[in-house]
Amino acid sequence: MKALFIGGTGTISGGITRRALSLGWDIWLLNRGTRKESVPRGVNALYGDINADEGKIAQLIEGLNFDVVVDFIAFVPGQLERDVRLFSRKTRQFIFISSASAYQKPLGYYRINESTPLANPLWEYSRNKIACEEFLMKKYRANGFPVTIVRPSHTYDDCHLPVAVHGKKGPWQVVDRILRKRPVIIHGDGSSLWTLTHSDDFAKAFCGVMGNPAAIGETFQITSDESLTWDQIYDRIGGALGEPVVKYHVTTDFLASCDPEYAGTLGGDKANTVVFDNSKIKRLVPDFTATIRFDEGARRCVRHLLETPASQVPDPDFDSFCDNVIRAQESAKASFFSGITS
Image 1 (cartoon, rainbow, N blue to C red):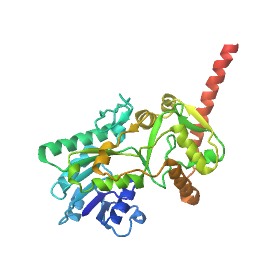
Image 2: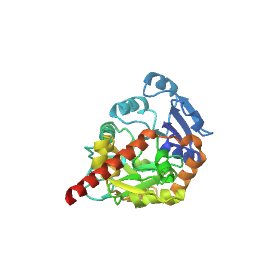
Image 3: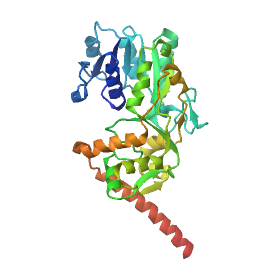
Image 4: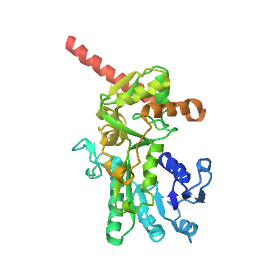
C-alpha cells in the first residue's frame, strides 16, 4: 500500500509516518524540506511548498498514484480546493485532519462523539476546520471524492509537553517556573476534564483508518480514554520533575482579557470539559487501545526537555505575563478585603 503525506514530520504526523513504515507501507512525504532531519529513513521525499506553487507540486506527482493521501497541514477550504484539483484522480482515499475543537462550545452534553454538533464561535481556527469538513463532504456527496475526516483532540509526543497556559516559545518557561517553585497559572479552578493522547497511540488507530474502504465518507475522532483534570495534569508534570507544582488559578475570562489569544485556545478549547466516546473508531479498528497514560507521557516529555538543551527556550515575556497576572489578581483581592475592613 502506498501513501502520500502532505507534511509528515509534525507532532501527529511523525508518529503516523513511523508506524506506517513499520507496517510495511510505501510512504511518500511532500513538504518544504525545512525539517529534513526529521524525515525517517525509508520514506520517499518530495520537496516543494504546496501552499505556494501548485504547478510545481503537480509536476512532482505526475505519474504517481496513491492508495491514500493525507493532508496534515490544511487549515482553510481554499487549501482543500487545491487538494481536490491535485489528487481527485490520484488516490483511493483522501484523509483530512480536522480538530475536536470544532465541536460545539459550550457543549450541550459532556460526552462527545462524532454526531456532536460542530460550532465554535470563540476560535477562528475551529470555524475554518468546520468549513473544511463541509467543503469535503459536499465533494464526497456530489462527486464521490473519497474523503475520510479525522478529528484529533490534544495530541502530543515526547518532544512537546502539553500545557494549557504558555507563551509563544513553548512549554519550557512553565517547567522553569515549576523548578524555581514559582506559581504556575492554570485556567479556571483546575477541575475541568481534559483528554491528552500520545501520538504513538493516535497512530495505532489512524493506520487502521488508512486504506480502509469502510472509512470513506466517514468521520472519526481519535483520542485516549483517559480524562484528567487540569490540576491532575500539572501534578503529573510536577511528579515527573520531582517538584510539587505551585498552582495559581485564574479565570479564563480574565486571561483572555489580558491576552486575547486565550479567548480561542482556552475559551474555545481547553477550558471546556471534554470526555470522548471512541466507540466508532474502535468498531473500525477493533484492536485500538490507547496505552500510554499521561503519567508515563509526562515522564517522557520531561526527560526530553531536561536532556535537550535546545528545547530549553527561555520566554521572559511569558514569565513577566504570569507575574503580572498574579500580581493583578492578588492586588484585586487585597483591595477587596481592604474595602471590607475599612
